[in-house]
Image (cartoon, rainbow, N blue to C red; front, side, top):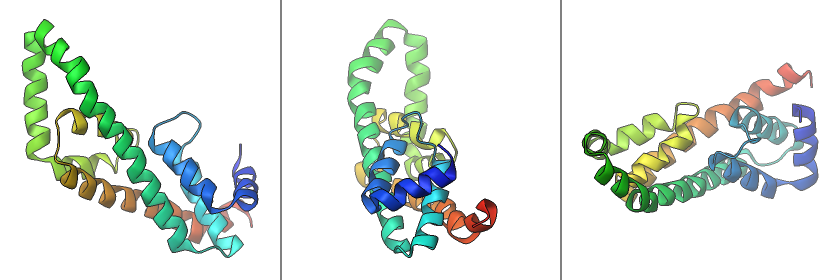
Length: 167
């Protein structure tokens, strides 16, 4: 699917698809690359007359909800998998415990930085959940990171997308 097809799809489906697609992208599902979806959304908003702040807000909400799902998987998975792994392999368990302590001690900055690095942006949710990072810290850092990432990519599409696509 190229950018023009995405724009046509957005025209046909509207804002709801922005929410659904960004939510799926934050779940790290294959076929939903942020580097295409978010700039295309910016282009679509610019050329369709849609409200940028509404699309931006929906993208943040979708990103946060996807991040919460992955955090919950990490939170539950720590009890199901890591506890057993630590018991079977004490040396690995000690390293994992040190990593979790460091992550917990620097939770806000670790999550925020993780949300700004491709690939790691979705994967940081699992160790944050496993380390039982406090939810308000996790949400604050995630919201800041999601807003920065989504805002930069959507704004790039909004302001430069037409030139790149020849619109």
